[in-house]
Amino acid sequence: MALLETLLDNETYSAKAHLQIAWSYDNQGKEKEAVEHYLTSLTGPLSSIERFDALFGLAINYRSLGMYSEALSYFEQTISEYPSCIEIQPFYAMCLYNIGRHKEATKLLLELL
Image 1: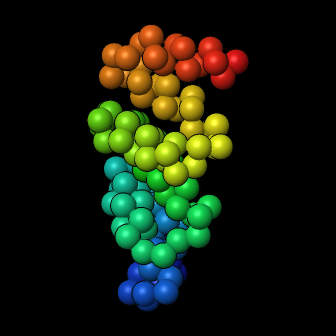
Image 2 (image 1 turned 90 degrees about the horizontal axis):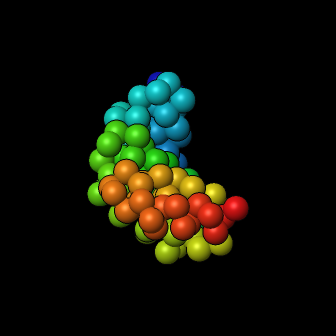
Image 3 (image 1 turned 120 degrees about the vertical axis):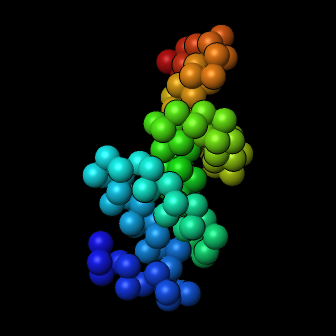
């Protein structure tokens, strides 16, 4: 991670470095630390795939941390920007369930089946 941190001040690579650091924290089970890096990565230039990974990762982390309204917002943004990526749907359904929208969550999961 130290090597990635050397790129944080480089305008060209900063967003990508923040995304890689976020993934690293995720792999260590440090979701709270990952959130800051996902957010920062989204402020810089990312490829479409990297942007998807940052949005989706951020939504999943917020949900894992019990920050359901933030998670819901990022799930919906990710779905809006990447409507063909159905891998978002089960996680979105879990978030809907977490906020008490049980019927919507169940309907979505059944449609996926």
